[in-house]
Image (cartoon, rainbow over all chains, first blue to last red; front, side):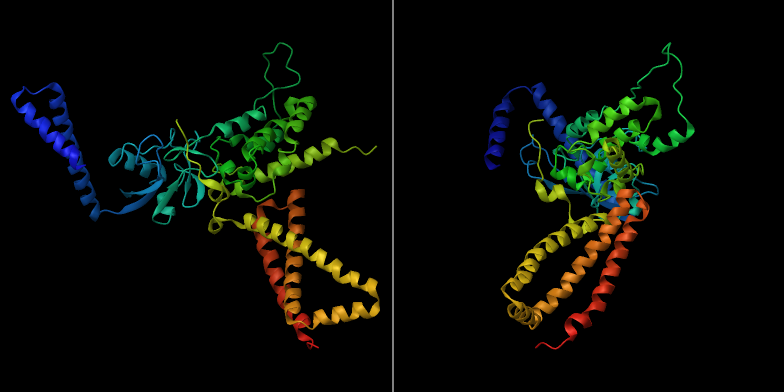
Length: 292
Length: 131
């Protein structure tokens, strides 16, 4: 550090005789902005003293910046207002204190499934979790069992691979003759698959599942739930259903589930995941049992 | 993305303070299962002394029953077996898709029942005189 300061001084001495370069001007402006920002931050933190605040402890990690490669927790004190969600608090912290704080978010209404986080020891959606419901300090970490790319951002590739592995699209055996007619579903059948259609691909269930943590080939609750959604859809026909059951009845399919109910408990859309997995297990058995 | 941070197995498998009912049921079921497998071997070893004649079998059992540790182990064995049975019934219901919404309650119920039965068994196991 000390050597750097000396260097700067000698540079300044040399430049005294020279005209001020554009670079110097920019540097001076930058220093000024930095000082202003620092002052602003200090005043803002000072004014927080007579306001109701919440304390966030946020997991920080950045492999690309030296000095941030060692994971650590940063504290952020954020003014609290009624109805504030964890995502609101994170956005405030990022916009006010540290613009390098990184997390995924998009719709802010529990539809896009971007901001599944590990909040106070549980997988939750940041935008769906009220600050008022949490114990302070609120500890925010990236989802466990997925690798951390930066701060609260985890690598979702494996999760998406598992989701695609069950062929999550409607694919009926027989299409209507002209191909344009509506393919109607009975009300009863719609009710049956209703809950399973609510999945938003947030990955909370996969992250909470112990078996998925130990067995990377395990399809995971979300993917099996997707398979359920289509296997139970009566419009697809018997052949397609058998094909779907063949995918999920393999060694690393439904049979890995050991009914810990972790996924059902953390699902932000309240999908009864374990129930669906169990039903598919029974379907798989029925598919293979022959009594003659 | 040049590299990513791997948090290791402890993080992968979660922290025990944050486990829920279903998770505890799973852990206890595994644990009691392994204890029962272990007991099976000692059980066979003790029973096989009968191959050496009536005398040997009787003296082995009497010798074991005279040890206070064995009495306590028997209480533990009963607790383990009872929990495994009750949770096994619970898992059977889960497999059949019956009462999945009440799975945590049935776990607590099996814990309470196990405790009650274990406490009730103490006079029987520890009561007799240590010959």
